[in-house]
Each structure stands twice: as C-alpha cells, then as structure tokens.
Image (cartoon, rainbow, N blue to C red; front, side, top):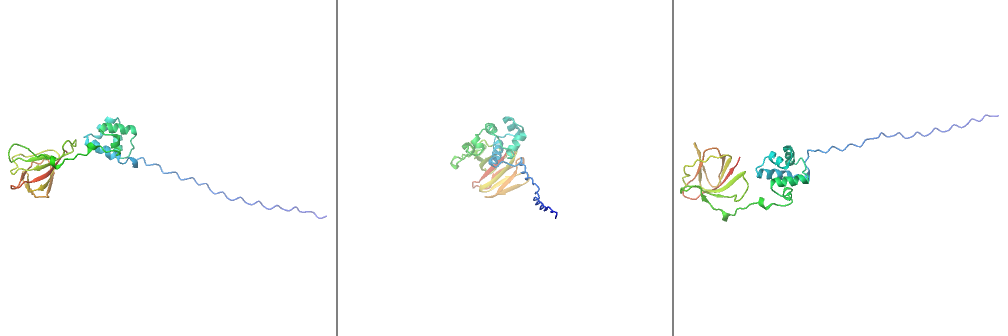
Length: 219
C-alpha cells in the first residue's frame, strides 16, 4: 500500500517591514526678546513721554515700583506691559492709558503758536538790543527753546554763553555772529550751529530789519 505524503503548507507571507517612527520636529522656542507687534508703539511713547517730563529711566521705574531694567525693556518693545502696568505708567507720566497705547490723542501734546500771537519784546532797555518772540507759549517742553529773534544793529556788549547747543537760521536780512576770534556773516537762508559755551553775540548788518529762527537746546 502506497504511503501518502502529507502536503506541505505554503510559507506564511512576510509581514511588511515597519517604517521607523519619526518624531515631529519641536516648534522653535519663542524668542522672548522679540517685540510684541501689538505693543511696538507703546515703548517709544513711554520713552518720549518720559523724556518730555524730564524723567530718567530710574525715576520712572521708582514711580511705578519696578526695576529700571524692566522699564528699559518696555521702552525697547522687548516686554509687553500688563493693563495694571499701563495704568501705573500713565499715572506716572501724567497721561491716559488710551494716549499711551495710541488709541486717543492728548490735545495737550499739540501746541500751536499763531503768527498773530507773536509778541517780540526787548531783551534789554537799550535801543539797539535784540527783540525775541518765543514760539513755545505754555509748552512744558524743556529739551529746547525756540524764538524768532530780531537782532539789533550793534548787538550791544552782551556776550552770550550758555549750556547746550544753539542754532540760528536766518529768515530775512543779514546777521553777524561774532565770536572772540572770528565773525560769521549769514545771509537769508543761511544756518549756523555751535555749542553754547562759546562766547558769542549777534548783530544785524545794515538798517534793514533782520529776523532769524533761534533754537536753544538744553543739552
């Protein structure tokens, strides 16, 4: 009797190779030094108002109860102020929160002097003295002062000397700016700038009236 040979089972199909798992790339860490777009304009406003009030970073920091480095980061837009901090900053700077974030306009920040309001006055009683018309009536700005000056013909004997810088822009006529060892003659449209510690005086040249824009800086 023939012996039956059992049929061999087909080999099992190989399971597909598993693909290696890939880890999702981690999101890059947020740059804490990057300015927050919504508050980018707050920093410059804080800085401008602080300077307008003649406050140092340390003085403002003391007024709002934080370290001066915190205020510095706020001014540079590296840190977002909280609502509570905005309120304290606004109080210390004498403004509103709306004005600080640019939502409202503080009308007191814009000052206009109309030409009809200019009232030149003599700087001294002598006839040849200069007349000055201040341009910043009622302004709290102390970083600079601006005048329309009407120089006298002789300039007198006054030797001006002051802190900061001086700029003179001739609007009409001819003006001499006299230093101890040199004299600069300026015509209409000419401008001169020099440190205020230099001894100097100005004088109108000729009989025709001259006038100039005079700007004096505090630093």
